[in-house]
Image 1 (cartoon, rainbow, N blue to C red):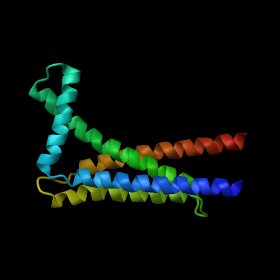
Image 2: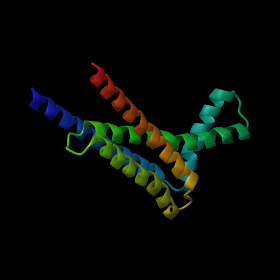
Image 3: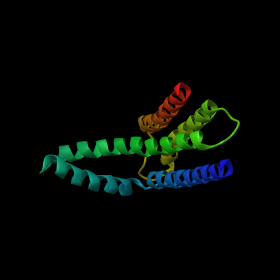
Image 4: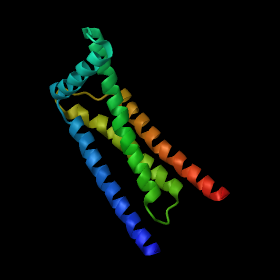
Length: 161
């Protein structure tokens, strides 16, 4: 029974690692779009959402929705990445203490957050901004933090029962 559970757990970790790789590719793809491409993508979404919110939005309302979508995209993309990294930290079976796995995972997330912004300076029509890197950090911190809290609550529940 234990061997079967270990194999199932190993498959889950491998699937999560695959999903993380695909998610990182998505983040990199979105980050490597040039200025006009990324603006067209987010402006189109902003127009649709502004119509839903305001009915007949003016240019200022569309611009506001556009800036919020761009900020939210940073947080959401890295929230999902942080959550997946947190799940790997919990699921992987190793002698390394879980607190160290979480710390190493957070280090990896910080690297990804800042690298994502840093490499934009080499893409035509893009710029890197420290505040966008901080939005990335906010997203991954919340995602990983939720997994850490759930893990600790489960450990507490198991200790009580």
